[in-house]
Image (cartoon, rainbow, N blue to C red):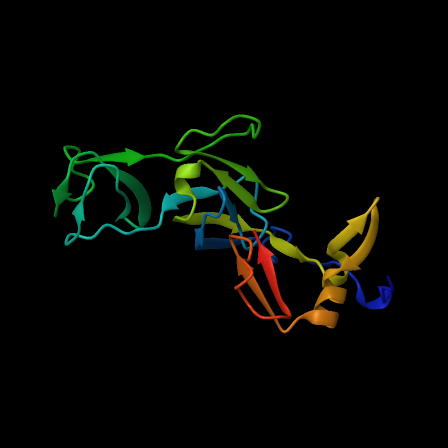
Length: 199
């Protein structure tokens, strides 16, 4: 494996959190895949990551028990769970809705309850209960920036602790297209030269 070290740096785009270089407020709707959400930036630990369900309440939808929505009150989003089938009943009506509070846990060694989540602040990963897989959530946090890793530092094959191939080599030698999927490809998927990333 030959590596051009002059063009192989991890680039850090981190903010200082000062008045001249403040962290930025980020609110993004992201899909939970395999019980994980990957944030766009490193979240600030002291300000935490706040979650809400991403479907906004609508007065024309017929909701059934268990449906989740967010409802905005004075500019803040709150998540509600439907407790009785309803149409045109706003979430603040406690006869039909219960406010849900997502709770961040600090121990990632326990099974998460439905509305619990764990944040890996170093790697920008939010872990959730399996109920939320393939659902969108709104993640609100202060972004500190991120580190960008070059494809030459991502290995795709190894043997006995030795790297046999990097992502850069794989792309250079065979890639016609790169796509991201939640399942492994079947024989009939894609064309020769397609690269599938499964996450």
